Amino acid sequence: MNNNGFTLQDALFIGFGATLLVALKGVLRLKLGLTGHSMFLMSFFYLICYGAVQKRGAISICGLLAGMMAMMLSVGKGGPFILVKFALPAFAMDLCLLVLPTVMALKWRCIILAIVATFAWASKGFIEDLIVGFSIQIALLHLGKSLLFGSFFAILGAVLVPPVLNRLRSHDLLDREEL
Image 1 (tube, rainbow, N blue to C red):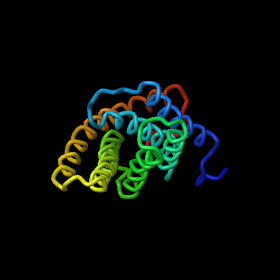
Image 2 (cartoon, rainbow, N blue to C red):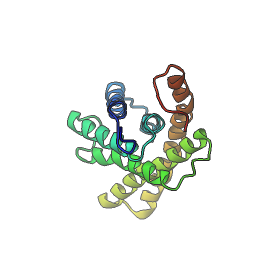
Image 3 (cartoon, helix red, strand yellow):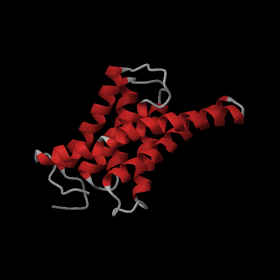
């Protein structure tokens, strides 16, 4: 067995996480009127994928799969840019994992990764605002609002990850030890 590659269980878990993310986002279609509420589900499922698979690139693959499914199923708004909406935070999380120390407690790593993902998610909106023609002041105001509310929801999703992973391990649904 090759420890560097993904096993069938890893691939199934990544695919399940991406599918459940898109399905919940599509079924719930929460129009809360709050900026950043989508970061709750996104950070939760990406971090569950990180904790369950524990291999580099797992979050990025999950984000790409989720983005492609969302684009094909027309979940959300933005057309082909929906792929960027899902993939950019996932890539940012994987890049952050290259420099994040593993001696840190899982809860704190999850919170840091969620905040990094929020920065990537909010920067996409900032760039869109500038492309559309908003002034830099308005674009920065939208960026600040997105960062504040997105971070709140992302952190809420992140703090739920360690207990869920512990529950999955206690029922022998994960074959790896704790991170």
